[in-house]
Image (tube, rainbow, N blue to C red; front, side, top):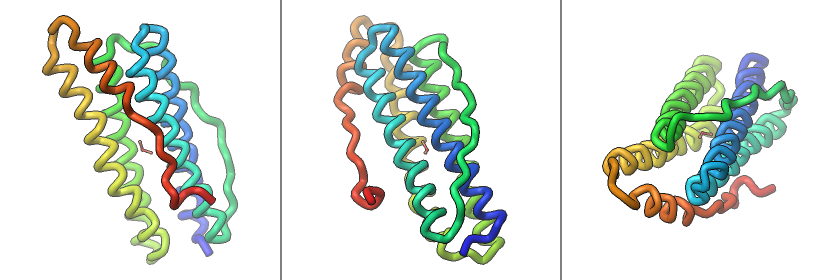
Length: 171
Ligand code: FEO
């Protein structure tokens, strides 16, 4: 059985993950409008992954006898200055999410909730990857500078990312 505070905090994280999905889908729409189909596709996959994160938490709350309460999802921004500014915003957002996950882990430890702590370790590792993949794109855009065709090449590369639903989350 989940402690009340832990249950509330996990519900808040469901909302945060759904907001992340919303944010990345908004970025996908922005790239689509800029005719950068590869970037748009990368962001769409990113949004799908965020929904997987949200549903992992959703399932866990239920499994532990908690009650999922869905809250209002804030509207995301719709415009960014450039592809670089957009990817920097992703990297920044992921660092913020890492902070939220760390707070959840701290709460689980404080409540001696070992099951939640173990569950959250997946998210701790996932955040390392999330930050790394966003930063990787940021660095590539910076390296490319004003190189002609660079954005086109990167767009093609990013368009190759595919969404693979993790087996552990398919119920
Ligand atoms: Fe659900 Fe991108 O962290």
